Length: 147
Image 1 (tube, rainbow, N blue to C red):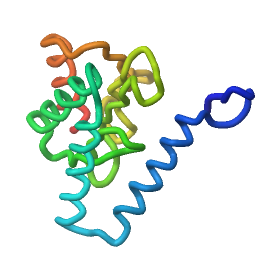
Image 2: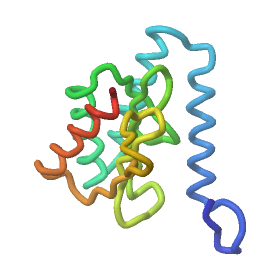
Image 3: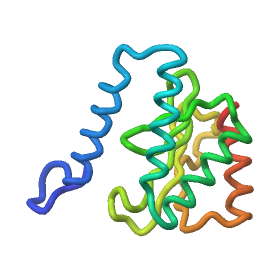
Image 4: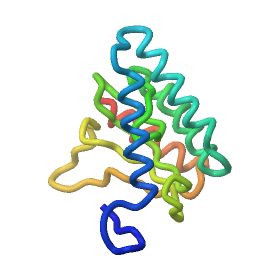
């Protein structure tokens, strides 16, 4: 939790993200099967389309990477972020820099990702641009995370 200008509580951006998550959950209430899959897929595409500049490029490339390397992961949104899940649990998501006005976006892996490596391993990566080398690194991570 970050502090707002008064020194306490959630920032306006964090509150907006929580509100967005609530709206995501409400939008899926009662929707099942293929209709839910299609709605979540479209929400993911809409989240990517709403991004600009480097954030959009990274979001688009991550979408392609997941589609090619781990097609079993289902596109959806997670706090408004483009995300990909297995059995309803988030495996990987992109948090754009613009969302919280940060210096860089991050590609992060949740606990459903099969990245375990001893007693400590990275699960979040700062991304300034999606070069060919960076894309290859994420292709390998997504394959591994998807199990």
